[in-house]
Image 1 (cartoon, rainbow, N blue to C red):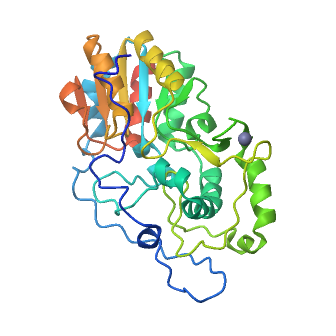
Image 2: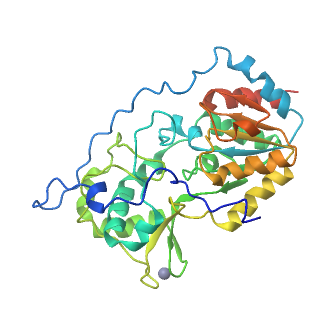
Length: 332
Ligand SMILES: [Zn+2]
């Protein structure tokens, strides 16, 4: 892997992150009040008119995709668009509400930021834990069962591919169900860590079962104030604990990138599903396949940064398109 044409991931690049104070990001409206864990109503997203609607006849529109992929083993790259129909919003799509995701630098440099992050994750992870795969995930698992795939590379941390039955999955940006110590590397399950946080924050339990929180793909939820939330440090060394997910400003771990490249190199073609390829961590696999002369098919609502490299583009939702694609490719 060349570092010259493979710059570090900067998912937040160009969005002006990193210049906000805690007070700006999380304004406290009850400065002199006792502990408050106020859940704000989810903002209503503006209409998503920036991308074209699904074709009237998706099956017909899919024909060029089928033609470019038939008879080939595929590597598949998936993004947030695949999970929106499982109730996990995609904050990078056109029309999505603006957000200020926490950066790795903010997380490691400020106890206040960590408190805010963990308080919000404390509620948000349950939402991911309860999410169920949709027809798009199921179709990709069926394609792997039919031996059509070298494997999946996903930018999602929600584990919905595994729940749908996919076996070969590279979780490029990590997984929500694991917590890692930034000092000694010890990992614990998010479920195990939850028991610790519940014991430290018994008053938070009253929000269990709230179903309609706005929850971001990184298990963040919107809370107005989290100043009294108690975080826990590593039980072995006292270090900082962080969900094992790639934050804005993080690099994707090298071993995962290499595993993902191997899936692309072993494949005859690349299918991108539900990703706008907004960050380098995904786009580089499209470049890799295109450079090797392999067909690249992209199924996504709206434009992607890989469109110029694509052999074929289909503007459609993955929940509709992937089952049709799986049926076409597995037909005798
Ligand atoms: Zn540790």
